[in-house]
Length: 210
Image: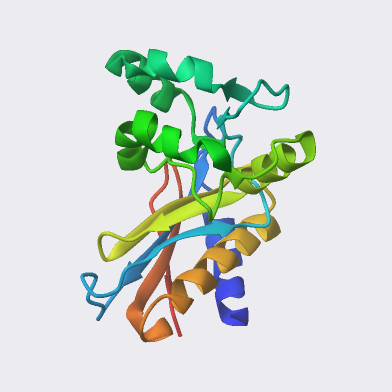
């Protein structure tokens, strides 16, 4: 892992030599896989990284309004029978949290839209029992630092940081993701061909796995 950290540091130094852009570029991590049957190996996990990648827009399905989050209460559910309103709601937020007691109604009303979008509240991340300020803020913080890894092809591409972040923070996020991916691969390191890091507008820096 020490080798990977050193190589990542060099890769980031090279990326920072590139042309200055007028926006804060996203840092993308690409993990290229090999010798792995993706029909047999399912990888669908949510990872909490040490450093927030971006501000996420979060809404909550709650019994009553809460000042800490944009709230959709049961009285408002029926208006989302309108497909256009439902589509707009799903597109307006990155993530949804929910009070556990409302989950059956949420599944019925919103499941057909939230499910395919990968935004359905789940026990892993997003469902709370007591909708008090502390619980809501804790879940919001957890969501803000979460990255979803879902593997459908032999190349995993994830946004793991911003150019404005410190190299050390970007490397910590990459290490957290990389270790999690290894744990879910049948032959761990052997299943990783290489790792690439890039900014939005740059060519990738390729890192061999030793």
